Image (cartoon, rainbow, N blue to C red; front, side, top):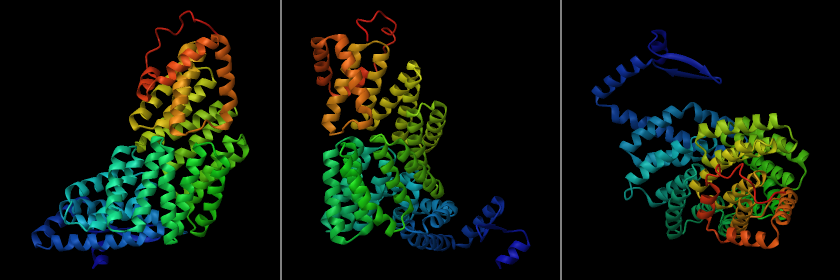
Length: 475
């Protein structure tokens, strides 16, 4: 019957990646849909369509960790419009099926840059249906919505969804779900700069995953603990966690997470001053993420490579890489990533002594970080603006900003990277000498007493009126 329709040009046949696929022209599709509605069989056909693709996505989900990951990502991409159609039908009809489809699609959405879209589907179904959906199903959907909200930079919503899921999972004594949502809550705490809380969440998650003998979960928890250790400046511990997780990811043939570990090892190498090793790690991770089509991670690797080029004083390549990453992040609406890219471009401008451009980029970055509530990363932005203040010979301002950043770092247990310490301490010492000890200490105390919001507001004050004025002192 299908061949007959093709022969009469009522259906078009196309080959995609070795698979025969069929479609109708839009006018014929509308005509056929009208006949379907008039036949009284529309509800039956729509449900069959939904059930077919529900089976498809639930078959695909476990394949997104393993050697067939790329193949299944492409299959899901090919069927994405079919899946959107089902979700639209589910919102108006069978939310239970819709939640199962959305839950199974979570990893696909996150890898391929559809986090915002996936979150909208889940939020609409979760807010619409609170009683008739199975409790376990609702808890899993809440957990998935929380994970997508983290990618979206909405940490308040992410925490709310995950806390509700955690309560349900613990009530149900659902160990796997509890471990997973604890992991997501650790991610929220990390982004917000509460590294002590993040570590406790990850440790509890790791304990549960070990009880379950869940290799994937154990590897994820080890990686996450390594990320916290790296931010706290415990590089040996971080490397141990990464290297302990790497054979587990290889055992699972999980190409995405192998690339993530390589990227993280690159960060450690860069922190310790081994730029050649860092470049190799970053390039290897970029290659894998390009193969998987993960645009969010591609942008991350580009930004990291841009940072290395900036340190080599190859400013043309540095700017090209960071701008490419920024373009991707803007297309994805990735505010966390946009803030990182703006900071990287600000660093390049500062190195080239384009201080006006650098300050504008840093201001955009810190504004986004304030909006997202990323305390630890806000400290980095305050320090960047302090360096601009030094360049503009606004030494009072620089000291206050450095002190406010130092207070934030101590509050969040976030250490300054080793490769930045020498320059930081040299600049601090020079300003201390220029101002004199008593003045420096008084200004430092002022900055230390600033609340985070107060410090950000001070950092964003318009300084045009003082730039170019006669400086109090200079270095």
